[in-house]
Length: 579
Image (cartoon, rainbow, N blue to C red; front, side, top):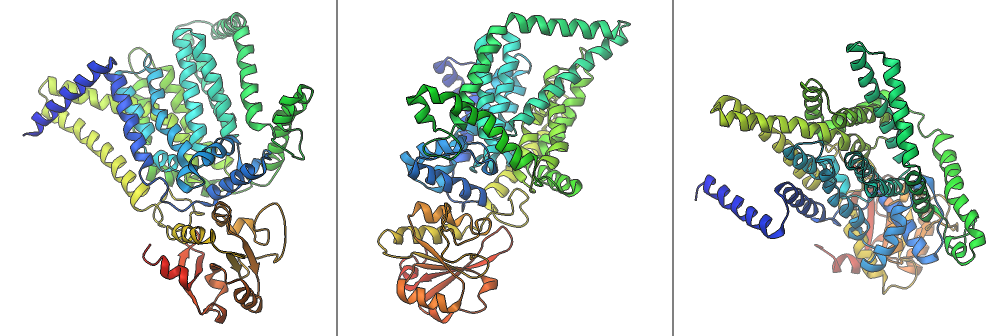
């Protein structure tokens, strides 16, 4: 069977499926993209060792599940994942797979939002946009990662598409849905505010476009600006009830997620407030004003963003080159082609391009570390003009085939092949095959090596039947206060250095302690026979005599350094050898 015959049969099967489902071919194609997106996200979803940030949030989810107490901690960002994963862990159990499920599901469904823009984009552009949102390598990598950034990107861009749909149809249900997604965006991470600022700035530039065109036509630009202002006021007044209801819905969703739970020092828990309505104002105040105050104290009035701009911008651009190169290049092509078309530029393409460019320039200022996941916020809006750019090449190729222009058709096919190859190769190589190597620009520094997870899994399995101390942390790097107690476990270890291990300890209900001298290590090993002793390689020049019956496994605790020894007790090491 030839390739042509095979393609014909595939199209015939697709046509039959479309006929049976009753959906048009664009919707069918986007749904097919979503199905493929789910497969790409769920393949070996739990195989990667938890990242520092994943372990930190997952630990507090387990703490919330055990204590019933929750309060907003700005340092770990929005509370959406804590509340939702508390439920997920109750159903699936606390695993690396389970903690990433919500992000994988939300970002897997995200490409459906492309259908909301059908009034503004051609059919091929809608499908390409869905594919970019599903498979752009940096988006795919962090769609398999428990973090708020891919969630806020999916929620806020979907909200934007719903607001565009509201303008196109005049139907309020799209507006209310958009407000709900904005609220979910704020619950996922606080940088949802930056999306609103980008939209406002983009709208201002669109108004500027209209004023320039008015001046070119010889009209008074001040009169045109006044007319637009009056029109906006009329629309706002006509829909004042919808705006008010939307604001109340926003407060309800934000209040639900940010309100404290249980016994906390910051205010009444939501459960108590629902039982006693007189406490609701205090709970809502803590969820809103209290959260804003805590956010400002942690991120605004702090030195977190006190860093040089150019190195962070360079890192951001390097990540875009590695994980979003095709989208960035095509976005420029799509913007230029759209801007100079005969009937004038599209508002959608223009605002998405401005939004993406401002994100590229702005996020290196907003981030406190060199964070590859921040590039997701630039890639998702740039995907809109990129879809227009790739759609342009598809139309050129199709027209060239119709005109029997083989040269032009070949050039268009070459562009398509290069784009598909870049996305496929980068996705396969950086998302799956080399998810932990120094040369992979998508991997953030605080990602432990793959071998850490199996060790922790073995310890967790054995801890179920082991009495006493299960884990001992040894040496200056992992120990700062032996015998200390506190709300974080193990309290004897510096939190910023030991993560993500507390997540693995907590989910296995493993008891961990700390020792800071060879003598204390000897006493602890003789008395408790712990399952594993963990020490940074630099703190253990040779195997301590007390660990003569232990097998050493050395792993990188960070992306490219922090060699760490895991000394497994002999019987456990033998039982799990080759696992």
